[in-house]
Image 1 (cartoon, helix red, strand yellow):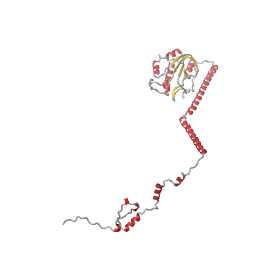
Image 2 (spheres, helix red, strand yellow):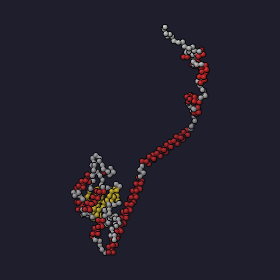
Image 3 (cartoon, helix red, strand yellow):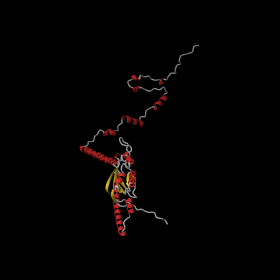
Image 4 (cartoon, rainbow, N blue to C red):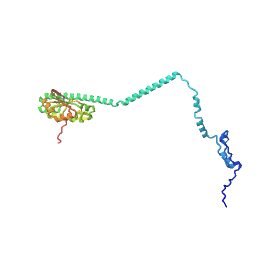
Length: 325
């Protein structure tokens, strides 16, 4: 027996649930489209009630206001009325704004100028003035000490009636405690121009030697020692007498003779036999020293003088050791 290949008959749909087929695309209005559900009448009523749109929903009102009424009504009303301003008020406002801009610009320029200025300049000037005053006081006190020492020597001669020995006079001259005058030489040397332009540091520019440097305290010490070895009786550097307690040292970028700072050019005055000193301190006798100076850009100049006067050096109190018994 052949099998039955016919499809089973579907269950009939009740009439109340039978869908209504309409050609909505050709209808006069889309409002005629209805929703049909293949449900029982009770279930269809429940779904219709559940899907009913709530017209009193606050969130829907907010979305509707944002989409359809984005501008506030009061703002819209305010744009309808324009305030009329007089010409006087307009120009007064412009003048006030202009004055404010000028004041702000002037204050800003003063502030920038103050930032660019060196705040330590006034402090340096004050310190420099104080240093000059102290140096003037030291010079005055030195002259007073020399004058008093001369008076003491004169009174001692009157009282004792004796004259100082030759050895004592020689010691006083070497120690720099008395002013002296006589023939001698003057040696002058200065820092190289290239070294001075680079704040007294070594220069390695094209066309200049890499050994360029400034005159140091060691150079002055060496020259003073050579002068004393060759018969100099009294020496002064830039007017500052070299005594037994006088130092030549460098401090803070300056060379100090005792407590007095000196600057280039440096003038070394030596009292003694001018011919012997000139020969001993010349380029022939000190060839290696002069060569090293030339490589550094320093060129000493020696000149003879028939009369050189050197003031006494500033000497402190000397304390001698005593035997402890």
